[in-house]
Structures are given as C-alpha cells and as structure tokens.
Length: 312
Image 1 (tube, rainbow, N blue to C red):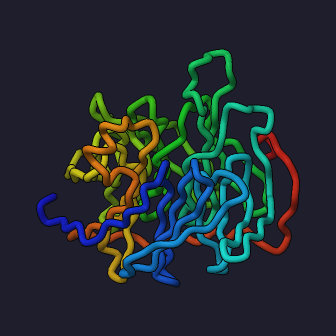
Image 2: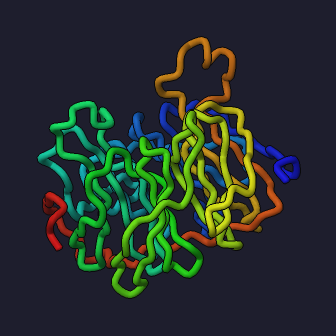
C-alpha cells in the first residue's frame, strides 16, 4: 500500500525542530512550528514557497480558533491567543513557571473544541529528583486542568472521529496509549497500551483519518506508521528524513499527508548524507483525513495571569 503514496512536494525549510503541523481548511493553508527557532511557518497549498512569523516564545503547539486570524497556542511557558500577522499575543494562563526544566511540546484541539497541550522535560528526566511534565486541558473558562502527570515528553495527542477515545504518548516509553473519554466533560479513563514502537523508534506527533486509523510520526526511525483502531500496524511509510516529527492530512480533498521533520542533534555527516532532514514533505495518499477541530474557548475575555497547572 505504501507504494501508492506519491511525494508531490518537498519544502526545503531545514527546520531545527519542525512540529505541530495542522491544516487550516478555511484558508487552504498548512501551519507548523519550528520550536527551537520560535517561528510559526505557513504554506498555501500548491505554492512553491513558505513564509514564517516570529513568535514571542518557543511555540510548542497550537490550534485553530473561530477567527482564522488567531490561533490558540501553547508557547513554552503557557497558553495564549496569537495573531501571526500582527504579532499580538493575549496570554490566558502561564503553566509550570516553577519548573525551569520543562516547556510545552505537543497538543491539539479535541472534537468538542477544547485545547489540550502537554509539557516535556527538556533533559528527558536525567535528574530523577526533578518534577516531571504533564498533560493539560484548557477549559472554556480559561482555567487549566492537569489531566496526566509524571510525563517525560508529551506527544502523539489525537482523538477518534467520535471524540470518545484519546490517544497519547510519553515518547521515551516507546508506547502509544489510549483512554476512553467523556466527550461532555473531557474526563478520561485509565490509560492502556495501544501500540509499541520498534526499539529504535519513538512516538511523536499523530493524527486520525476518516477510517479511525491512527497515523504516527516515529522519531529516529525515518518512518510514519498507520495503525488500526485496535492497534494493529497496517502500513509503514518510509520518509526521507531521520527524525519525522508530526503528521496531518490536508489539501482540498484531505488526501495529502503532510509530514514535518527536524535537524536537531543530527551529525554533520548525517545532514550531508541526507540534506532533506528538517524539510516539510507532502504526500498524495489513497486515504482521507478529518477536518481540524476549532477551539471554542471564548476570545473576548482573555486575561493575563499565571498558573502552576492546578487551577481547576
């Protein structure tokens, strides 16, 4: 099946740590972040070049809002609305300000319009005495709820098409997990193993297609994997980069798989041998994705406050 994929475009952006890619269907635009460069990238589908916007901090992840001019973001230190064109930032909540060794990493808007984002330990927990990272949910009242704690690297967040199954990964565990979720309250049940990665692969960003199958970019493996809703490995897509980081479906027909990647920590030899590391890859596929959810958190009453993540 993987031989029915066609790499139709590659954008030579050479991202240090490309991540968090999403498809904005209203403007036919792909957005993604280069976390380490504090830049938000955009690419109009079908064009030959991309552009970028400077961010006030490293941008871990983001989601769409009711106004296409604004994004809901998890910057390294907290949640904010951000207007890329004007650079205006409206802070909602700061999180983990007492933890200098963490930053926000992966996140997404759920099917009910709530924005979730998880932090990561920047040294991946080499010091076992340090408090670990966590997964948070931003509620519509702008209060933050800690959902999962004791995490090293939050990743792989996505939901089933109906929104009642959450998928999540703590990357160093090399395990994708799942939990049942109450779609009304956002409360999740116990996490259980969904799939294990190969010994050399680490689960990174994920998305779900219209068949309810999970796609996962697997760091350090040069592959993207597709799993059935039961956790069966259905497909392996080899990609021309060592460190694929995140995936989404986009394009007018939602049949293009878009993959971000990273150059960070790769040797000069590796970068010379495979110059495409850090680029954005666009594949036409026989599969169809789902429209990205819109964050329903109200914009007008945004506040500038701080939080340790235990406010709800």
